[in-house]
Length: 380
Ligand SMILES: [Zn+2]
Image (cartoon, rainbow, N blue to C red):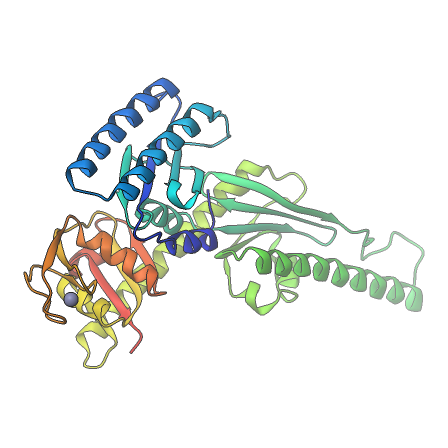
């Protein structure tokens, strides 16, 4: 699975006038063994090439797409399908620009092969939005264990142990000696917490995570939290009681996913409430519904696009200035002719990402459905 930075990079790829071939497959081994996947791919590629030849592509465009199909086929033949937790696959090719990427995914998508001016990224975006990257840390006065959690995947980050002694020394010590021992112990614990907090900050800087979940005894967690850097501290999504030494990975993963899901739901509901409230207010910097959202997008005003994952809608786009429209046959901006867009919502998503806006694809049936399944927070 690729991370948000890689996805943003991929969304900028636009090899005009050449086209990009985007392939998605569900690779769940029981349902889709390799021979079935190859048959699916052959059928899809035959259909796409047939359509493209009829659509009157240039010689160079067509030659590049034909090579894409060969590269994708060879990559599937050579792929081992043994990666743990692999359920799906996404691949992007533009042979004319010598561009090829293949990613394994924790969820599969219906077999899809599209050829267009940019990579088709909607499924990947939806996937990233639905399983945010979280870090789990279990911490006590001697040990700190950290994992990176992304949906079904959990990976070790670090496991630190510091010899910090015990606060109440057995027998013997009194007065000055005892307080010196306590002081030394507190210093050692402080050093241990600081070391773990520094490692988290370092991890955050090299690969930002959305949420941090803390496990252990609640007083120790509180002590540790005081050492977290602000950037990391503001990601804390929840805390849970667990024995730091005996905790199992799967237990940690489940607890993390559960706490993150609750926090996500809260944030999503809050976001839609703010969106609806702002859209009702004059000068509230928000719009809802397809028509208003497209108008804001055409003015490059979108900061965050919110779209329900089940929403698609036919529309039109201007062939000369890239304006997106619901149904106008003539472009209101440049007067040019408009062409049919099979799914104008998909184009709006791609354009938002191109304009540097952020994207939230929300589960179907949520509060956004009452707002026309699409809306946006605006820059101005
Ligand atoms: Zn136009």
